[in-house]
Image (cartoon, rainbow, N blue to C red; front, side, top):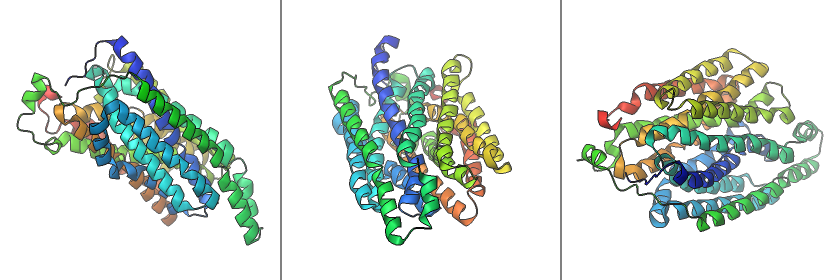
Length: 425
């Protein structure tokens, strides 16, 4: 593969720009943790309906994957990123009529469009950051991007929560004593609070799209293969001839599912444990902080002291332990275990991508597109959590994370080696 890395200096500029993109990914994505309880109140929803927020957002990664691949084929990596940002801005724009009419379906359409823009961005940026430098330090570079992502993710619920949830507990208490007309007026006022922050988001997305379009980000050739990779891929006709890629897609599907559960359910779960929404919004930030701690550990230790595969195994085991801790305790302790899942999840994404893309050569774009489709786990797994929360309790619904982490552990131990020749591992 001809990625044209010429040393640390040659990758610094692109990494700064891609870091800004990962900041935007994190900020927009983790706004959902506040949107779920906010829309649950404003649009009068149950648990399952409120988690359609994550479904609409993440299902776009599945449905838009072919569009993402076509976009990169037409525009290339750099301009494809700019296109993705513009699509995200259009999705954010839909929040304005959704808020003024308090129409939940329109909110969901806006989230879907934002997710579609992110699908294009992620299809370009994740393989880009993976292949612009040495493969053995890919997890380290992705960890740096992860810090940008999760710093934004920690900031987002505090910023948006300031606008949307500042009086949410008081409003919820007042609603039952109001007339139908008064309730509608209060909920209309609550819905309108989302307009100002999303106008700011639209402006930032448009400015960054312009910066990306005018930047000098180098293109990378993912269609070329070096001799070793070309020899090992003789006879391979499509990406479906790589079992480790397909298993990687399923692993990413489950990983994104549990990551979204850890970040997006924790506010509502804390509320169900008797913690006020004003305080609960900080638990998503705690989840992001624990992820950042994991990323910093990864940057320091990978690959100098530990291989990314071994770090992956440790994280999968931690995910199981923290899931059991969530289920075995209640109150603040249980909520804290949910936030600690951020630490367990931190080095999974940085490990899955290079392991799944190893040795695929000219099939890199197709493999990346499949992996992006795996992000749809963020649509399906939290929705299952929501259904379980309605059927049982938000506490018991966390059982869904246990089989997810078990499969992730399998991929970390041996699944990523399936079908690989030794030279490609």
